[in-house]
Length: 366
Image (cartoon, rainbow, N blue to C red):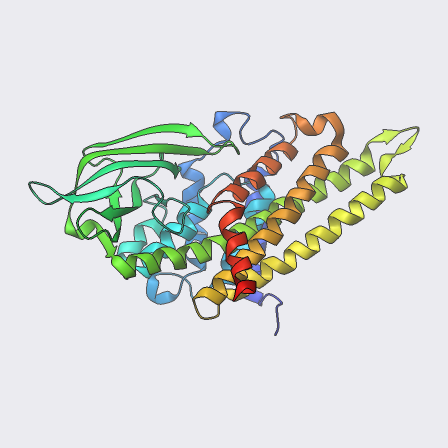
């Protein structure tokens, strides 16, 4: 199997690198150190104009005929730059939910153009307490969604609720300004924006219901598969950035009249980081290629194994990067700590380690 990038994919990779250098290359502080470093709609529109949001979608869905590899390229470049835009929650998760529930290219177009920010919780099943019940004029939504990425900035949410009567999952696309919706913004561990959402008898029309029952469960499962692979790519990008910064630091920082990078003990630690990075990169490729195969338990086990391996190795790289920088690695003056916090955040979403360990372990109990 040829795992090298095509000329078109290399052009996309170069585009992401140039954009990151122009918009994030001069930033020396952590993205969480100052609110002005948070999510910016103009930057989001520039990303949309470059075609990133549709790069991984087929043409019939309004995309550019790409697939999982294009998404991997974008997420890896974004991770290396510690970009703060909602790529995982919107470009991957929300878009894939819309595609898998059969929405038309016209319905997806505002998201791909950057005109509408649609965000979805990063979960493979309903995680909040949302219930959809019959009201006086139709269906009403009540309950809470405790963690909606970029919830304060979103124009529309994709929500997973339980139908009160049938008990089945219902996927809903709801405007953020709908009546009965309240949101409380906060910052997550990595400094990125999120919101806790509350719904009190919020009316839901039939047009706002994307899918029900098995169709809704399947859409959530497939979207989560794509998001987990994208998560692995972002983690690799972050780890590569941490590795590069640490290597540069060891070449510049002097002690006893010479760069500390000449000390053999530190060279060994950098060698260990490099090995971990290359192992994790192989697992990222495995996760990406798994998306080209049939859906189901086998693919999910592969993705869970890749996710566990990628995060364990990239977190090791993050810890080593902070230690090798010394005290300055703990400050907001360098993005080293911010990269580690983002890796920790990626390790917590989609249920953290336990469900993925269980999924992989189930293979050996059969």
